[in-house]
Length: 243
Image (cartoon, rainbow, N blue to C red; front, side):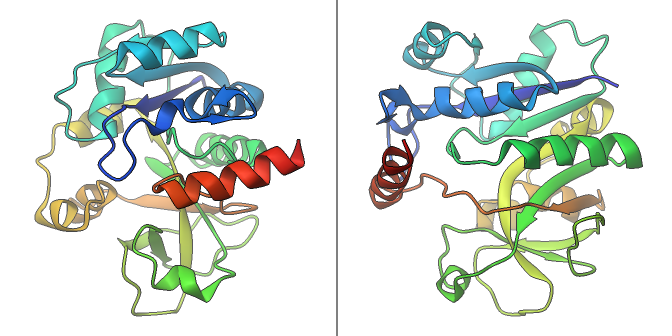
């Protein structure tokens, strides 16, 4: 089985415009994420961007990128446009990796891919243990509730995704990555956005609302997503200190 990683990216994020090209250690956030995807060594990596400046930056840093429409409502719509533009005859799995998590663990990417291949499941994602109770109240941090508690070797079904947290049983910090069977992605993209999805700004709820199962693997860590300037400054401090 072959996997393709596509990273959707755009300059017009509502909370932090221009974030893909913010620099850490002299490299853009989007190129740092592309580098992590390449390190996983599970298949080709393409950045799907609606802005030529992102395309130029990504190519300058040695990665492949494709310009997409600026009319897409979701990142999944953007990766599907790329999928239609390229030869996918040999592709079985499509991984949608968020472009704002440069600290994502490479082994977590590999682990998700292996679990998808081994179990022949339709959609897979990652989640990490919540170690900071403040995360439960933070609406920028998406939570997932699973059917069973997450363990290193299991891959339970997701029951729901939320920004606000009420029930504390089997609730985890959702990590921004999805892996689809190619045919399942094609089916998902044809579904209308659900009311739940629009209200909560979470496109994975479209799958749940249409009885499409999402299985969840345990991530080693929960990377910081860059949603605000405070996130960026915190991440920059961590990564530049490490360097």
